[in-house]
Length: 418
Image 1: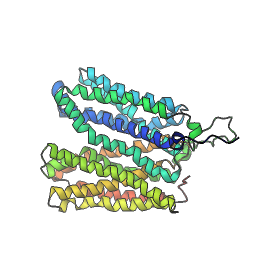
Image 2: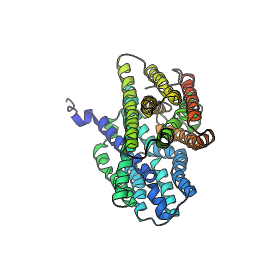
Image 3: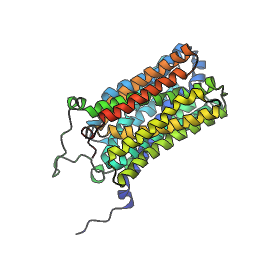
Image 4: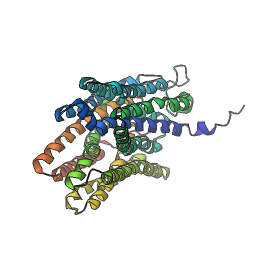
């Protein structure tokens, strides 16, 4: 008896799941951006000084980084991902909603700590899901798609939150973003059904004819050169991403005297759009090259090499004479960074099959801690030198280091792409 013809939903199920991951990542960044956008009226209401402001903004980053040390282990050991993912999203959504009724600084600080803890699970979860439901040739593209949700959130958050804060009250921004995150569970539960039947690499029950291979131990992961390669590459490029999300507005206003109005917003939107485009195309090119017979590892390295050349345009910024030329260079730079990031996320999925979330958590911890340190040092460099030239040299060195790590550690003998 012939098996029934797969439905359109079954044939394209992985893309529907990817859409829910894109939405989760969008909401993840929208929620975390709410505080940084609404911090001015918050500080005014609570009477906070700059030291209080710094602790408030840093509370999320440090809890987010430290949580990566254990969140991946939890995810890889959880069998019911269909229930776990909504619990995590609802966790950060509820923390955001509770800000609406906060009336003191310490409570707000602790809520941001818990937002960081819950949100730290999003990327390890998405990396694990991509590895389990997409073939290797599509993973860089799929990683770029779900990661691009973060970039789109950075386009939406400023105008959305500022409108609610100025028209009503800053608390409405937290209410709206928290409520939107709660709604995410509906499409996820509708789409993510029977993964053991639809997913390529989903673990089967013990009674299955072919039991799933044993997952590598943590000690084994730490002995693998590819793991340290992915860690070192991330430590080299992720600070460049955090510079764009944290310092780009200050660079344009301080170095080019761009006024804090819609013209600044338009330039920020353009730069963020180019990052989004890079993430999509960086993965699509690898997919296209793989379909033409190019080895996947070769295709990824080729995209990374081109991306590196585009990113090194940041060294030319001190020589340009107009803000428009600077924005063009920033667009080229961020496009290259986006293309590299899509492939970096795919490499995380090749380190240890069955432990993708653990690897994502450990790498995320190393990346974020280094990025936090570099972002803090950017302020000191600008203060000491009176400009951003030394900062751009620092990033040029970090990106060159990352490229060397790609070719030293991510070799065919150490990277197993299935």
